Image 1 (spheres, rainbow, N blue to C red):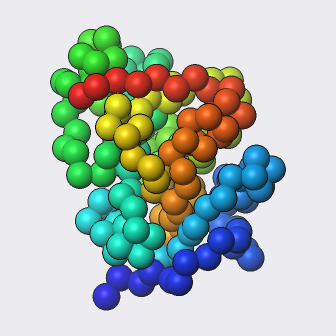
Image 2 (cartoon, rainbow, N blue to C red; image 1 turned 180 degrees about the vertical axis):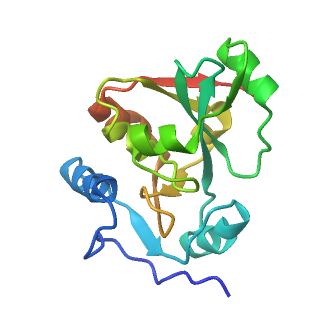
Length: 179
């Protein structure tokens, strides 16, 4: 049985990564309320079903993508149950071809591993090398469910707070595409 803790509204007592620590510091600074749970390691969207049920929301799917030359990077955020089609995403972005960025790039640029990609990694992208791209469907959701930068910590915040408070704080512009 997949473990999901009771809902909490405060930061964890101990942090697994610098990113995770920074996430909770910034949420507090921006006065963005959240609910969170600790879990067994969740890597796939199937792992997130119990998390969605506990937090009464739908987890987003966050993908770290790049162009063929690995010179342009994208954090593509879509609804969790939508299949990813590289061709459709490439067309919507106006890029010849996007694919998954290498795990090493994800670790060095976003300080996360596979399964923990999150919009919160934009806190570490101080040079704006990663373009934040939302699937239009994400914006219609009241709640934004995502990782806190780890594969064992998940939260829900208002989608509006991510778009209007958090992303401006990181100096990232939100791009919206329809796929």
